[in-house]
Length: 177
Image (cartoon, rainbow, N blue to C red):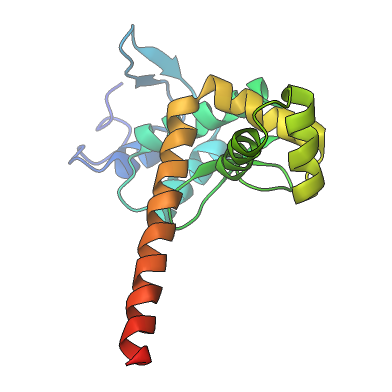
């Protein structure tokens, strides 16, 4: 039975309209491998459409891909969650800081105390931040699996801090006369 036989309007490029009409059927998710059929239960499909609506610029496919990827990462790394923010979604410790913040603190501790072993570096960071060593280890393991992603977040944070400091310095210089 075709979409028009089910009373669905012809597909005009709106993923959500096609999905709303046909979400009870199998959908093909395109990957670099072979197509993967996916069936969403109606309540899940409705929530996915709502998610796409709340995130302009995302397609159903990109939203489903991102959410499945995040769920798989959280499954691989218990204690990791994903948060939205001005810089986009990022990995964080459940009830704690973002992973990039932990990694930056670990690097800083290691640079300051290069002779400390892994356990002592984590203890130092834990003592200075109040984040439990167990959580720091979770963040380090996540970084080890996805270093490019976390390192890009650190670079972006460093650049934003540098720009803010330069702006503050220009204001200070102007007002100092």
